[in-house]
Image (cartoon, rainbow, N blue to C red; front, side):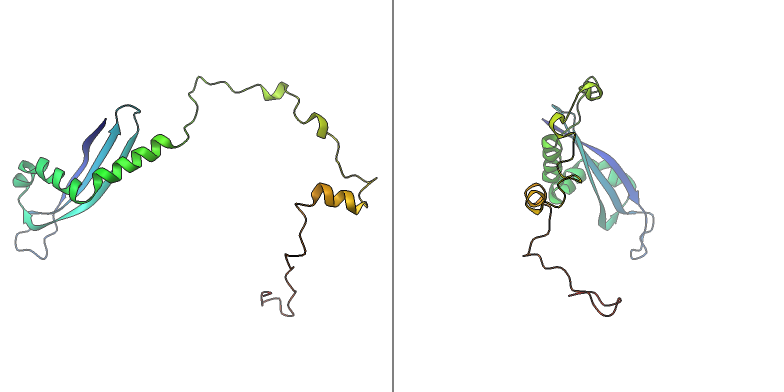
Length: 155
């Protein structure tokens, strides 16, 4: 189940283009959705321009109807549901009660304590290719040709 709540309602006066500057010109309207099963929340807001401007008392009387209209017409409900779905499907941290394994007392990498390539075999190209072949540049990756001018990048 999803619960919706208006969490931002900021009427604004700015009627330079209208004759009555005492009326509300726009409302910053914000809606929060909560997934009641998971506790996840999502928020979206938008400035809604009122044309024509509206007296503040009329705006307050129509607040529920306007909220429903704005949220539906602007796609807030579906946007919030998508946001909640993404949050609920995303990986979450473990609870505070989770205890990690004691890695300090583990012996990881037993068979790899010594370097495979060392001073005794570093000139053995076949061994180097076998061990580090996937990390070495290949012939299909041409190296950039140096340019004569340090300011001009190689092509």
